[in-house]
Amino acid sequence: MAENEIKARKKLEEAEKKTKGASGFLSNLFGGSKNDEAADLFVQDEASKLDELCCMEDGCFACFDDIASYENHYEEFHRHKCSICGRVFVNSYCHHLHLEESHSAIFKLLRQRFPMKPLYKCFEESCPEIFVLDVERDRHVLEVHNIRESVVVDVKRKKVKRQQICNQRGLNDIEIAYQKVGAREKIINGKKKLIPRSIIFGCDEHEPMFENAGNLFKIAKLWKEAGDAFIRSAEIHAASGDRKHDIASGYAEAANCYRKINAELAVDCLMKTAEIYTDMGRFTMAAKNHCVIAELYEKDNPDLNQSMLHYQKAADYYKGEENRSSATKCLIKVAQIAAELEQYRKAIQVFEEIAIWEADHPTLKYGAKTHFFQALLCYLCVDVLDAQHALKRYEEISPSFSDTRECKLIRDLILCLEEQNQDQLTDAVKAYDKITRLDQWHTTLLVKIKRLCGGGEDDLK
Image (cartoon, rainbow, N blue to C red; front, side, top):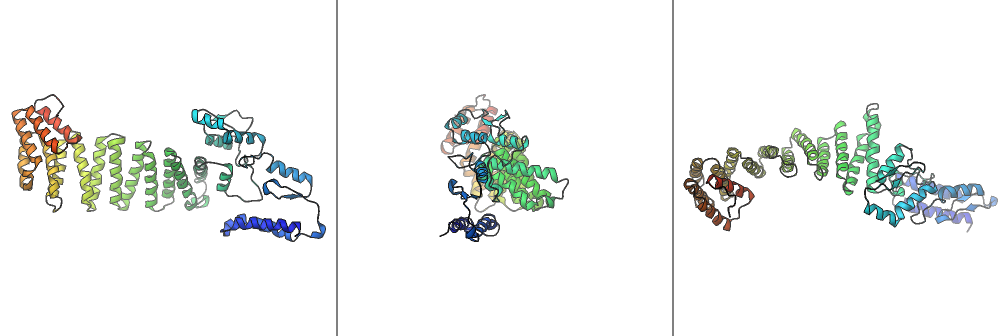
């Protein structure tokens, strides 16, 4: 078999590997050039064979007519090649940096021991700048030295997509995400005032870039950057007049990221999401977002007044959608927070509303005793006489409440307050707690009642 035919067979095999399972654009990218080269080899005139120089580096098989061409090829593609990973660099300095950063155990140890120490040197040998993160270094060389993809040699005969270039350079998820967010944002911000939006990229093209970048940031646990990327995605959807659901989803994703680092940023995103769903008439979704906001104000960014306000909004939306069960859960939180803020009248009103509704419900009527009990505890924090009248009224609404342990405890507490008998009050609470454990909310109210009984101590035990 002729030498050229052997080469052609090899080229065809390589082309088949590249095009296997691919079609259209990918086939043109990776298969076309190889097939063309193979065809050229087949049709060469064997009568005019010349002695050729072939590069045998790692199956390169590039052939040259003269030594000068071969030397130029070797200098460009094989001179500064990493013997460990096979990557090729434009000069010895970049090759040296690569060996130090990627394959040096000492460098990795320094990164672990001193994570905030600048270790990443600039790709420009004359530049003295050193950076803590390789991402910062990449941005620096791009903006200051205009070094883009030239650090790692790219074979010009092949058209390589941007993602493949990133893989060739060994960029990690964080770096790729920075490139996607930073590059796209600069293009959009720089051109959207000068060029119609549809001419720049079109929302369908550039919006997924921010969404994909946000997902990569989430993988890297860079929550602030992930949230920023999802917000940009939502803003692009909004600017292009896309479906409101896509805009709301972008802000919701951003809120999930911000919750891990900054509750205020999360609240801002959730408020926008809730407003969008409200405009769409999707009140159940809006209510869920108000519940999350209330939880953030209750725990992560304490502001009980705001928490109570958003629980109330959520309850109102759930009621409008006839989702009474979810509305009740929110109303319970409203009443409990109101009691913590010593807004006892408001707490009483809400607890009564819940208990009366449950008393008329065929399956929930046995749970009404809990909320009657909570309302009566709030009454005792305000006025004993009002508590007595309320107790009588509750027994008329729900006759079964009279036989409960909760009702018995309320009677004992009223008697203790009238007699100012602190010891008897403590004994009554202990007896109840032995069977039904009191949580922190109930304990706080009972301590308040004990103080009204004339005792200065906080211990009910």
